[in-house]
Image (cartoon, rainbow, N blue to C red; front, side):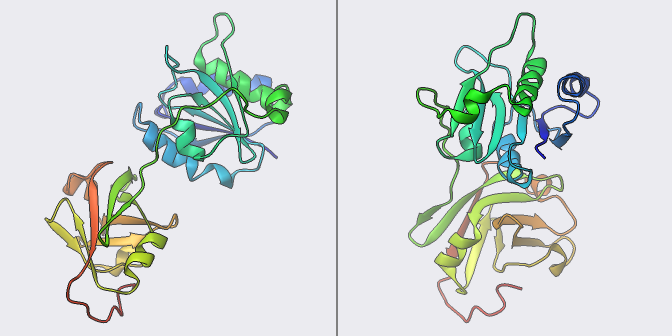
Length: 267
């Protein structure tokens, strides 16, 4: 059964939740409303896109995902209902949809508020209409003349055998998730010795850990998480706080010049 999810920049104490949930309870009373993620850093569409992109497919097909992050439409952006991969997304057309689906959507519809209707009720009403099947046109019609704003996702790059990555997400523990995929790393380095440089050349990592606890408390480590992305962390502490890492910080992985057998690199 399809559900409605909320991804917001609101704290748990904000009354906005009550407005949205109350509206949905009135208009779609049989539909579960799930908080996908709250307290996204305000106006941080990159953070929000990362969360939605890596979670929406875990919900049933036909689900509607409301994105209340930098959601106010302006003179150069619109509120859109976007259909892609069997799901529906409602938010501000500020580039976030492209970051989430990274492909041409199946259908797009601009949604406009009724007289006196704010964004909270607009998004909730539209979600309820989709659940009830009122928006049959977007379910059946392709996106012909409507498009979404493009925002190029950050990807790791190759430079003479080195992989240049950036931090794209900081989690609640202060761990730094990069855009270096396991596939790219293994294609470039295999089992060859390597050095991952964090914050320029001040900090180095020479092995891949399986778990945080594989290293002593306070030790710097690299591991591939359940998204198969390289994560830079410190066992038992916040690397983002201690090393002043943030989204956009650079992580560069190079092959060691003196090659030795690579056994033990993946512990």
